[in-house]
Amino acid sequence: MVTSDNVIQQLGKVIDPELRRPITELNMVDNVAVNDDHVDVRVLLTTPACPLGGTLESAVTEALLALDGVESVSVSLGAMDDAQRETLRKQLRGGEEPGNPFTDPDSPTRVLAVASGKGGVGKSTISANLATELARRGYRVGLVDADIYGFSIPRMMGITQQPVAIDSMIVPPIGHGVKTISIGMFIQDNAPVMWRGPMLHRAIQQFFSDVFWDDLDFLLLDLPPGTGDVAMSVAQLIPRSEILVVTTPQASDAAVAERAGSLGGQTGQRVVGVVENMSYMVMPDGTHSAIFGTGGGARVAKALSTDLGYRVPLLGEVPLEAPIGESSDAGTPYVLRTEASPARDMLRSIADGLETPKVRA
Image 1 (cartoon, rainbow, N blue to C red):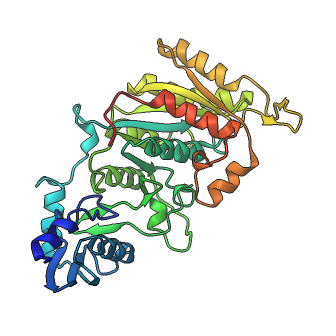
Image 2 (tube, helix red, strand yellow; image 1 turned 90 degrees about the vertical axis):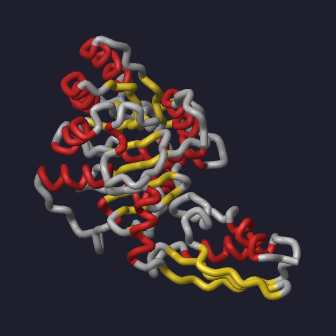
Image 3 (tube, one colour; image 1 turned 120 degrees about the vertical axis):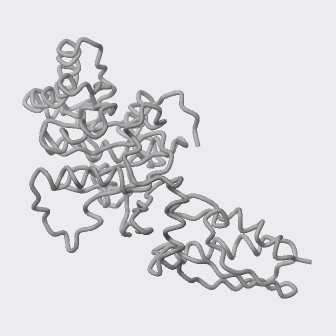
């Protein structure tokens, strides 16, 4: 016969889709009742309006129906009260008060700030695709849309739900396996953000300290163009972060991108490489049309190597393909494309250059 203990043990296999831990470990199972071959279970959501309540209900039902002797399941959803949410927050934080976990020299997370000298070079597209590719390979990945004024990451990652607040802790939505946060998730009706420097700094600080990232292998930051307030805040808040520079082949873009990379020489951040985007277009006859010129990425890599005193590699040249923009608009990063293409394969190759020998999740 099925027992309550059998049910609880089986529910330990159900993973909360936001917190990525068993619901039994999170004390979300409020009550279990077994009547012959029927099971009634009550699950407490972290908030009454949890957007993934239906997903969790389906997962609980599926798990219990897979248990020998169970023929039917009834799941009721409730919500944690304030005291339960506070207890959960303390449990997830390990009893510690909110703080920036990425300042710890022993942090296992590699923080990569994706920078560009100017807008329009595809920096956000590169950020979203690299984060997704690393997650596809099994790494635990976070993505911060640090471009406060020009946020675009939620759409590119296909995320429409808002973050969930557990007490004072923010749980980031997950898109394609990537934990993601953006000011765009808190703005109504695509309203403009009109903040000065101190407010920008505070927003970035909260993205690091108030968001529950848990243990990450990689945290990618999609920076705004240039070397302004946000870039300086990141250097101050996470001194151990590294910089990945994105440019195009065009000479004017490359010259500006060099300044973005040179910031590392002043802040102590290491520049891990350069990505040249929109390098060429493959024509029907197989030839390459260099629409924006050639050599910009190589020039930036060479100049930064000279200026910084260490080798800054050109990690890859991503060709221009129309479906990349269509994929971004649809919320499906291009690296997930099943059909091979020069751009998809190059984006995956660039991720090879960012991999480290950390243990995969």
